[in-house]
Amino acid sequence: MELSINNVSKSYKQNKALSGFTLSFSPGVYALLGPNGSGKSTLMNIITGNLKKDSGVITYNGKDISKMGMEYLSLLGYMPQYPGIYLQFTAEEYLYYIAALKGVKDPVEQITEVLREVELDDVRSMKTSTFSGGMKQRLALAQAVIGDPKILLLDEPTAGLDPKQRIAIRNYISRISFNKIVIIATHVVSDIEYIAKTAIFLKKGVITDCGAPSELAKKAAGDVWSIRCGADEVTAYQNRYKVINIQSDGADVNLRVLSYTKPTDNAKPEAPTLEDEYIRVFAN
Ligand SMILES: Nc1ncnc2c1ncn2[C@@H]1O[C@H](COP(=O)(O)OP(=O)(O)O)[C@@H](O)[C@H]1O
Ligand SMILES: [Mg+2]
Image (cartoon, rainbow, N blue to C red; front, side):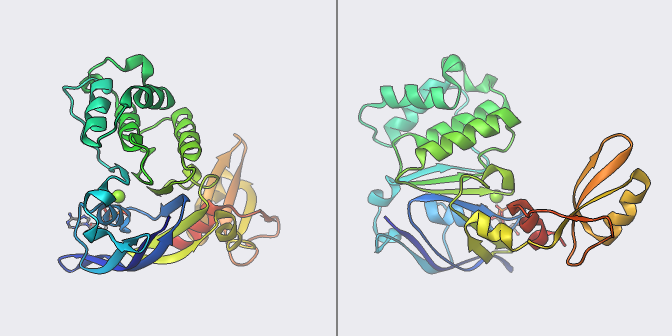
């Protein structure tokens, strides 16, 4: 099972949203990481066929997806960044509707299980118009998963969720990713750091790095420091260094700082994380 993106580009008028994107996906979880405007949603919309690319070729198991028609569409599960949900439906009715659209033969068991996994089973008979943002987000994930798609595209799947729900969704995605190509677009590094086999850094429509999260994290080795200082010194450090985290214990402050050289005598070297590397690459 292989989804290959070959030299795909897309511009909106003069604005190049994606430039020569080239990567092959095999089963497993991929994180597409980059700040707002880096082209993540554009790539997802091209893979789903919702958006026309300007150039390049996408193949699935060697076949051009633009020539596969329904055979390709039936492989896809897609959670858009701004999901529109049919508000007159209950959660359950909505999922039956989606299952029918996807041609799922015997949906009862699947819908029951998915509702339980996204923690909406107790509100299955409620109108989605009464749902909170987080509940709508989880229903949008549920609809993407219905029909057991081989290619699952999730655009900012944890936006609007509280920390407990983020962890639940992260674990759920991890569990269902077996034998699927899962692509998660996000700017929240902690959502994917431990579940992605590959992280892709996308900067202004160009891949700047791609690899195992632990390997990418290592690139920030030697550049991450902790500094203990007084509250009145924080601004001075922020002016001189990229400050990743500020933690105050009331009296003093612990800073996590990026610096290519030892910033002060009392600075202690820290083990780098993917988030450190992400900030190193993307912060200006
Ligand atoms: N429909 C559109 N019309 C014009 N420009 C767009 C449109 N969608 C996205 N863009 C532009 O393309 C670039 C990439 O956007 P997008 O793919 O949404 O990035 P991301 O999902 O990483 O935030 C941005 O500069 C954005 O302003
Ligand atoms: Mg987006």
